[in-house]
Amino acid sequence: MNLQRKERGIALILALLVITLLFVMVVEFNYLTRVDITIAANIRDATKALYTAKSGLNAAIALLKRDDNVYDAFSEDWGKFAELSKTPFLYSQYINEGTIHLSIIDECSKIDVNRVVEDNSKSLQQLDALFTLFEIDADTTDAIMDWIDTDHDIREMGAEDDYYQGLEKPYPCKDAPMEIISELLMIRGITEDYFYGTKDSKGIKDYTTVHSNGKININTANSIVLQTLGYLDGDEWITPIDEEMARNIIEKREEEPFESIIDLKNVPDMGEIYEKIKGQITVQSIFFSVDVEATVNMAQKRVRAIIERKKEGGENIMKIVYWAVE
Image (cartoon, rainbow, N blue to C red; front, side, top):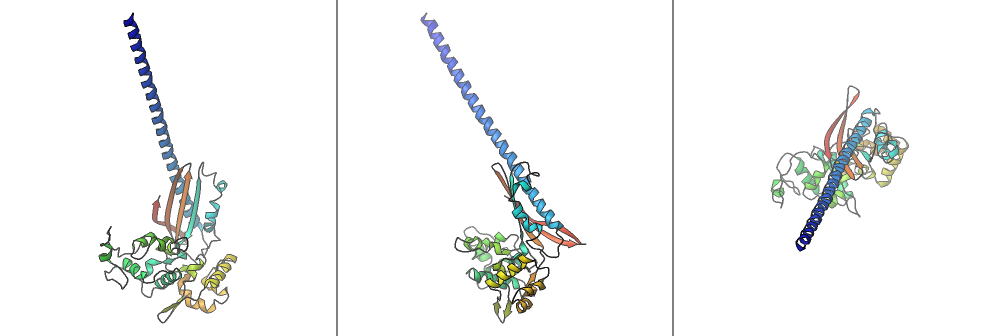
């Protein structure tokens, strides 16, 4: 009798043990299944977000391609696209789920740092003027020029391989044009505060480019860049456009875009100034940067690209010269 009771007790314990193991296995299987489903959903959403971002880029390219005006200005469709992308119902019929934010920026509204080594470079003088406005040591341009030029001669405040190879994490001096503007952060003297700015000061990132034809589009340049335009008086770069005059230019183009650079003379007190800066300005742009951020549920993808637009046979030819996915 006692033996039977012991056997029944052991059987009960074994049954409970088996049930416990089965329960643990079911819980673990359920957990792993839910993890797999979540991972699959994240991959699905990330893929959707990526292709949504690519779609936004293609839409931007299409807008720029069909633009047939003789000038480029914010009043055109490409200039309004960023604001339209903030209104989901305008594009919800094309995107089943998620949101998209897109901006198109005229790179020809900025100072081209790749052109500072050219003979009689106006871009160098404009960059010096920009540094003065932002209270950055103007001698920093020596290091930028050394980074871009092909020789190994060191300017007074510049730097070549000897400096960069001596850093804690060494790298060579490029001695070639920059491909992206963030390369400035690799150059001696350019700090993150100078590049990105701080809460108390602006950074040079939004005022400089490495893709342009060297001329500033007066329809899209902001007040700061307009104030860097000037002319040489002996060895001194004179910048006749002050903050008030730059504001007048912006107000005039908001009334009606400049269709030709000569239209700048319609701004009060610009007659003589126009004659001195006309070689530095344009109303047509060749390079545009496109920034697209797409969100699907919790997944986000960002596509950045630089688009070159050229006229060939009366048609706009589009080329992606830089591309990055984040």
